Image (tube, rainbow, N blue to C red; front, side, top):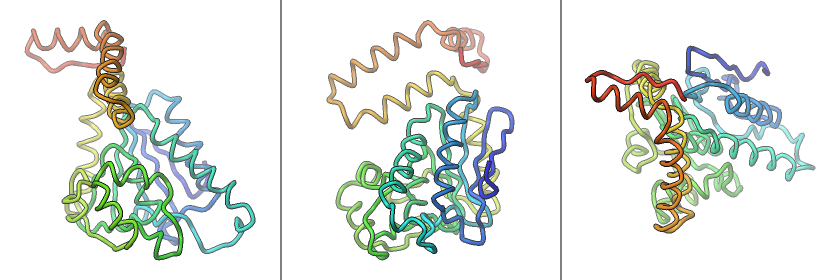
Length: 255
């Protein structure tokens, strides 16, 4: 893995850290490609929970605009961004964004593409694109309206204002806000809880919810019928029933 990206596995939890603190974890073209490879590795592993974060007190300030090495091939660069964001979105495992400091532009949208956003009270968010003369990317045009509604999404994207963690939670962008000193413990507790859950069932729940906006009610019911028929005979479903009868916590294996 590149020096500017680290992947650490602790039991069933994998943590990917964007590690460019001197640039507030802004992402170079090469780092986008490394993130894509890292997400694909997680998809092919037995990881149960992914944590995505940044080093040095910030999450990510989006694409690194300090160089012009990609000025002649913007479509190639944006295709890599597209593939990276799709790979993150399509992960079947629960993904937690651990957000401290700034989550700006594509960095904010990477956080929003995760299933849970746990932010410190000093976290700051901005859809800064318009202030840089750019349009929204990294999935923001899909994510924002679904999370906050169309008018609020336009406000965030067109004005590009910086908002604090409490405001982000009020808008529905953030799962929880904790003191900076408690951020690691809060993320670890959530990751532990998710890792103890039934992997196959959680993966199917995630797929059903992600696809819900593209189907009508009848289609959603049909998708649920297929998913439930697949999972109901699993070892984990039987274990959950046995645990209920025996008044104990279930031990899920992913089978």
